Every structure is written in structure tokens, then in C-alpha cells.
Length: 158
Image (cartoon, rainbow, N blue to C red):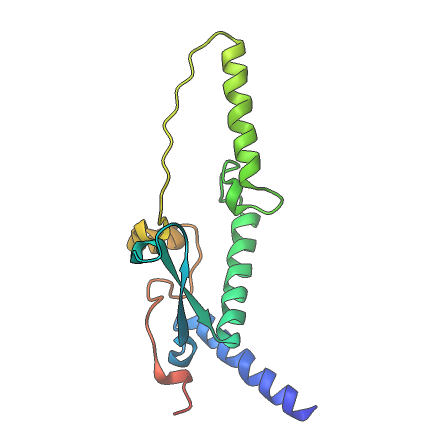
């Protein structure tokens, strides 16, 4: 039992230091890159997407950061109600239902309906990460978020 307490205490310290400093320990950045086939021709590299298989410790820290961020966003009503894909008890089906409902109501009132639809094939790749980080700061998610990719040896044992 002593071993579990000793290990969990050290992990707790590493996580808290990482969260308060905004610095991810270098060793938590290791991952195995896998290429998953998305669609069509397997001979085209663009038909694959990369995923990173993280260590268990990295996944736990990722979950802690996600949970804290999600709680902050919910408690402060930061997301618009139209952000269906990012809210619990919601889905893209609700988005489709709302769209169809609004179109039908408009048509029933004998009004004209128009729409512009965009499909971002790789939405995360198209994000301006500087804007993303400034948005995090603007909505008061701090802890040195302006240095998210910075590594430091302060938490490394070697």
C-alpha cells in the first residue's frame, strides 16, 4: 500500500505543477503515431489521418485538463446554445433537427429560405492556434496557457 500512496503522491505533484506552470513535462509528450485509413484510395496519403497514442499518464493529464476546462466553460455559460457538438446531452442530430425545423417553419410562413454550408475536412488543422490561445485567455482559462508547447526539465528526473 505504501508504494501506491508514494506513486500517486508523486503523480499528483507532477500534474499540479504542470497545471499551475503551464509546462508539460517532456516525457509526457511521447506518443506513437498511427495512420488510420479514412476513405477511398489507400494509395493516397491524404486519405489517411494521423492519431497519437499517448502514454497512460498523458491521457490522465489530458482528461484532467479537459474536465477542468469543460467545468469552467459550463459554469460560466461560455458556449453558445448552438454549439451542439461540444455540449453534454447534445449531438449533431439536434443540429439537424433544429435546422430542418427552422426551414419548415420559414417555408410554412411563405418566406424564402437560403443557406450556406461549409464542410471543413480537417477543422483542427485549419485553426489559428494563436487565436485559439488568446481565446482561452479571454475566457479566463489561465495557468500559463500562452506557453502550451513549452517543455521544461523541472519535472524530469534525469
